[in-house]
Length: 526
Image (tube, rainbow, N blue to C red; front, side, top):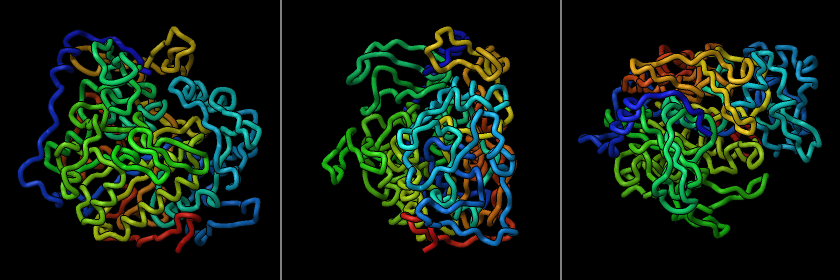
């Protein structure tokens, strides 16, 4: 789960000294802050496990479903820009993976979960040939009876997302900051840096006592240290560096992390509660809260290990016992009360987060549309930017390899492990370089990783627009930093080299797009 690297004692001591108590709210906190753009509220909806080609491989052309139903209606063809898709690249009929991609019908929305480990994804990329997905990351779907890793949905299943693309802006050149599964993605989208984790190995129940610590770089899924819902066989706390929440706290700007299932005091209609709360979707039962998706729980400064509740609805976004960590229901409470934080990170209850195996595009669509409809109906809509993206690709095929901006050369001696480099051969994704005067080397950060969807929904988003500039998870961090004048995270965070997302917006001509109210069941215009 952790790619170990060379380090020095001085660096470890500095990391320990960097641990601080949660930052107190500054005097005079309010709900209005100076910004460099008209955007006063940034909402990041962070979904699960989709490559760009898996959802947009034939955009904007969709085929009718097997039952004849059609949900997506293309705007005037000549007005719709072209993305870099499977279809435009000629890879629907001449694919190098030994099979050709096939459309997945809406009736088969629930699929199996592919291998999306750090090492397996690099091996599938095969140095940029992108030709080993079937062999190395593909799963065999029980309903379709075949490997589906190359296959894709279109606008008659992921209808809402295609409609958002038609009316707002998206990127076809957005990448995971590194390879690998959920935890690296979750950490990168709030900090741009997976370096300096501490793994604690201890009792499988209760608070860890006397755990064994090792330092390294997060390359796999591991639960947050001390979270009462975490597995205690291996858990992680970041021991150096900051996240964007730390920067927002230092500037007295409101923010919140809103996770499905985080409020342990709620009882679901099915009678489940606490860490065992679960919901039922098309794929069956799944716990609402997934600890290794919880971005800010990995840092002492922004953790809420007991899932303490905010002292009042008016304190959502401000510092109290909840320490900016909330249930997704609290987002809608703040929105309804006119106290939407300046920055919100949202994670759906797991059955609606889109993760293959336990979620699906239709349950995901229900969450996305209901959330966006609510924001558009609020007083805050006119100054809000919503980013939708995904924590990793789930190993789904995508034909585009991004630039390698961070190199790494971890050779894992245990073939059964999954956190070694393999892009150009065993242990090879270039050569990691020291990043500071202490000579510290950050291994296990090979990237950019797979190409992922990114959409911007805002009155200031360019309408029916596709941006082609290279960006990654840390570009979202950079947008927040620049918009609220926070400065940079430092400590080799990728925010310093991140591509800018300004090209998705038009801030010169005032609001340029209108509300788009969709049906959560079909994704169609209401």
